[in-house]
Length: 262
Ligand SMILES: Nc1ncnc2c1ncn2[C@@H]1O[C@H](COP(=O)(O)OP(=O)(O)OP(=O)(O)O)[C@@H](O)[C@H]1O
Image (cartoon, rainbow, N blue to C red; front, side, top):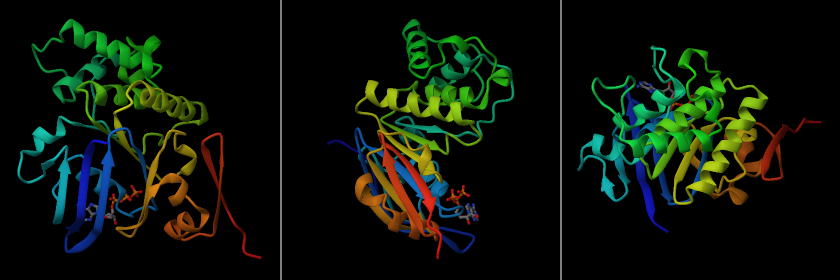
């Protein structure tokens, strides 16, 4: 399968402190990774590296065979959609307009830029896939957090990225909002079978059933990685979060509980 992304022996040091140490990860087309770890484990830092937003202090990152450092970061970013729930939009754009800004990779629409008819059709199609058809004309400040999260996913997909990075997309969503998001992500995976995704979360309950692989991060190091069935065990996830955990999987979804010490 085509390799979309490869990080090898990556280290990140900030202000003299190691934030990531010896992390290696290969993501192939059609794989859906969960990146799990406690607060401060280094998940967002790793996601920024994978999204070619920052350079590693040591080690190498390749996006579609192009090595960070040898080619312009901006060129690599075109292949990677990054969904950041802290999207800094201030103006009351309509959902449809927000989705189209994915093509110019800007927060606001660029002056005088107009989408081609094919691009408008793609925006409509993505909004339908993400369950946003009836909200296409709604303005950003009036959208719920869940609707915003799905709008940002559609926006990130506009330039047809090969890899989609999702940083805690279910943060702040209520139960129906979370379930709509998970359903939309699974729909997306069915419709774009070669798209690869990496989703950061603290909560196993938020993982879509289509998740194929997982990486557990603890204090900046990879504790375990590989196929979900092998990585997401009570033992390993428990080590990752420093708690005695029991994990169960029903209908493709995970539930987790803390084992009480007797
Ligand atoms: N620019 C920076 N300078 C110094 N320390 C940083 C910098 N960026 C991140 N850190 C630190 O690195 C560690 C990892 O941060 P990161 O945001 O990657 O963790 P995370 O796993 O995403 O955490 P959370 O679940 O809380 O979002 C944290 O201790 C954070 O304070």
